[in-house]
Length: 67
Image 1 (cartoon, rainbow, N blue to C red):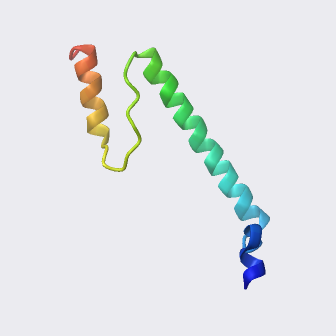
Image 2: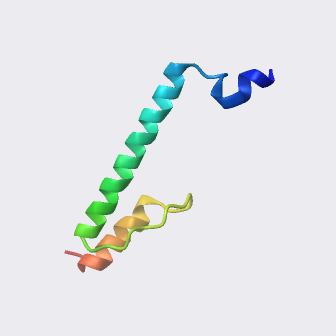
Image 3: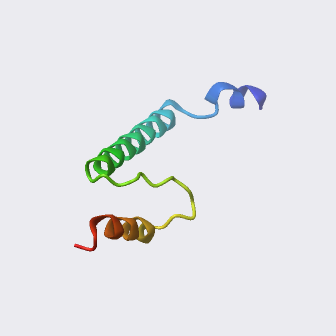
């Protein structure tokens, strides 16, 4: 039992590869969002669980003057 949990021995290589790919995708998406916010001159919202997409939209409307 202990050997299986040591250094991801319990997971097969395909599962580990899938996790790495998903993590890379998430990092690329996050980086792209940060670049878009920088171009739009909007403060990057902090990533917390209570934040909703409407909060971001409200900040965009207030920063653009409700165009």
